[in-house]
Image (cartoon, rainbow, N blue to C red; front, side, top):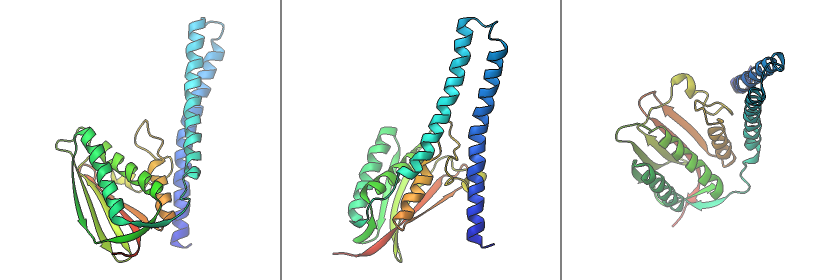
Length: 232
């Protein structure tokens, strides 16, 4: 079997595993709660019955959120591509980063190592991608002493690479291979669709994303955007 086919099968198995985990746990909890309610229906007073019904409702709301999260993957698409001045994109990224970091007291530095270029992309998609990446970096900096984010851009053959580096908590090695899998998350309030959508949007713009991280030693996100040509 070709390596690409094997990888696709492994990713599908990961997705199904995450689905089994999310749905299996909530279905089991609903069944147990219903069984207890049915067996004790005549014994429970009205307040106790309402309590158990609320538990079931909350579990169903969680399943509804899961379905909405899965639907969101197909909703986010790149409608059209155009040539974008990289410097304009870079300046917008800096403004976005400065605004977000100022709100959270994070030191941000930047380094531009490329000349005037035109990249192929979509403004809305790029805004969504970079906002998500910056938010993830800042989330990783919670409770970190002297939190820092470094932004860097440099040309690499047919791509310009944008790096977002933080000195945060990092990602566990077991989790690193799963971060682009839809619905995979290590955060309780997160449905795990952010990076999978980022991966999808970049692919539709002929871009790429790679994440390097060591648990406890920060993370580097490397985003490659396709260069159309240089411009004056």
